[in-house]
Length: 389
Image (cartoon, rainbow, N blue to C red; front, side):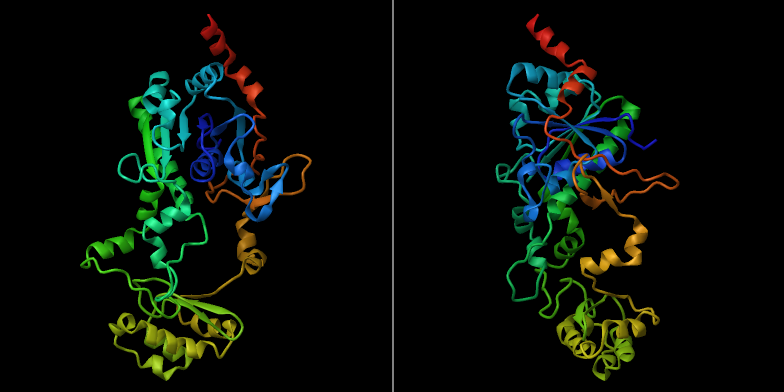
């Protein structure tokens, strides 16, 4: 039995942050029912990365919505809204990601839902919270990375701000939402009542920067200074960074600069015994390291540095990673193609439970595929009959 088996989660979200949280709850055993607009559905059904499609939906939609069911209801239609409310009355968790106030206008805000089901845990995702001047701004990942200061940490000194090439804010916010929902469910075991969990893309991406923001707040508000040579962390000293070798790249984490100099045969680097200079002169030192490392292969340097306990690694492409024994040992890929379609490979849930078999996820649902079955199973048609009476 998976930890969340028996839990019913209603996913009213689109795109990534909310749906990724619902996906993780499904991975952990919850029954997730995706509530979508008839004929349209989750906008990510039509948002294809690199034009990849499978069975009429974007491949990334399949990835984020595996293990779910789909019902199509028009919440502006009184009969459909009545059925949605009856479904909510039987659920454990509701997740929504509309701009503040939208669910209230539909009659599905937290207070409305709490009146229907006091035990429900109501999770809300916003871009910038529910108060303040940015409430109505679009909650989009690149915009949040830009406004949060994160983009100023990447790239070398002198380069423009550089965002991460991932939907980092969305993904991290989804993780926070799961943490909040699980905490609220545990509290419900004691109190018998649910609660509301609020997360925002902005707060989550600020939390991701807690180390560097804390440094800034306690260091006279001095702005982070990116390295001009192979910057990898605005607040860490040499040798921290990625260096070119004669046939690839080598990553060096924290370590003694002078000891590394001895190991790679660089007198200039070995002479850097003043640890305070490892930060104040990090660009100069890293250039000295780089001048030596480019003379030999990555494997050559690893053979010298790893046995000496230096924290270092090769820098893999995805092709090298997927072919590696380490990746194979993770058993991290699964096929979530719908019946009759060619394979659709994606990652697995990263959480494992000792001694339990890892099942392959169910494919993402077609829009509204489960509507009629769920209407019958949960007695939702009774709601419209009661309204007519």
